[in-house]
Image 1 (tube, rainbow, N blue to C red):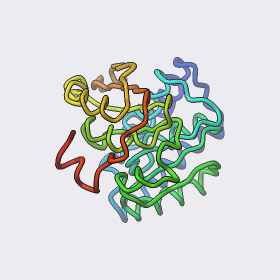
Image 2: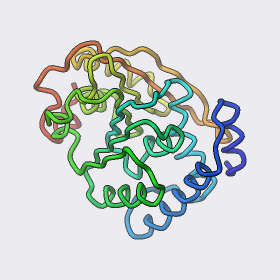
Image 3: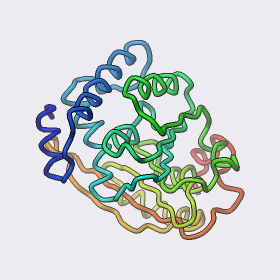
Length: 237
C-alpha cells in the first residue's frame, strides 16, 4: 500500500488526512525503521507493508467503533504503538495510555511521541496483570485496545479489568477469531464483558482476514482478575 493509496482508502472511509498527519505517519515509519535496527520492534519494515499492515490495520478499528474526543484509551501490549498511536494521529483529542512489559519499547514510544508532537499520551512499563490490579488504573479507562497480543480469552483477562463499567474493549484479530470467540465466551462473561459486535473485513491489497471484536463492560470485574503474571497465558479461563 503506497502512501497515496493509504490516503485515498482512508478518504473513502471518511478520514481526510491533513498535511501534518501525513508528515506524522512518514516520521513514524522512519523512526520505526531506525529504532528497529537496534531493537526488535517489528518484522515488517518495507514502507508499503508498514502503511498497510501496521498503520491502516490499526486505524481500521475506527471504521467500526466511534472514538470520541476526551476518551481515555488504554492499549495493552502495544509493542511499537499499534493500534493506539495511529489512532491518536487520526484522533488527536483522545487520551492514549500504553502499558508494555519491555522497557526498551517504552523508551521508543516516549521518543516517538516527542518527535511526533503528541500530547495527552502516557506510557507505563509494567506487566498487564500487575497493571490491572493497580487501583490507579483498574476500571479507569473508557476503552481498552489490543492487537495480536494473545488469544481472546487471555486478552479479555488482561484488558477488561482496566475498563470502566459501560466502557468498551476493542480486540483487533486476524483469521480464526470466530473460534477464539467461542472459546472465550465463558471468560468474557466471568470478567464482566459482553460481546456487542464481531466485524470482519479483508485487508486491502493482500486480502487477509481481519476481525474487530467489540465488547462492552456490563458489570465490575471480580477482584481476583487478572491473576498473577503469566497465569492467564498458562491457564486461560
